[in-house]
Length: 140
Image (cartoon, rainbow, N blue to C red):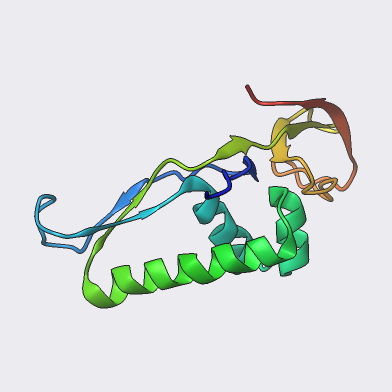
């Protein structure tokens, strides 16, 4: 019997959930499905350049599990690129990670960052160095 997957923490949901080769009608390409938690693993490993141990901690999985996820993800994305398939991002056992809200003491600009991203060094609006964490808030 296969053990059920535990929920994995996802810090960022994808802005776009479907990619296909240019000039091919939607009904023609074969699809590869990448779960949202798999998308998060790729984002952490390749875009954020986190070490596997750090990324696994952010997702709430073991380092070995993260390694298996990322290996499978890279194979799927390579198949999409090499074989001209479409990529759909959907589903999976995940929950969004809580976020932190920050307010700039200088310009009062407010913004959110994923929990665990650390305290921001500069305000994205006025570029001031001093910021403070306003409060933590979990997304529902």
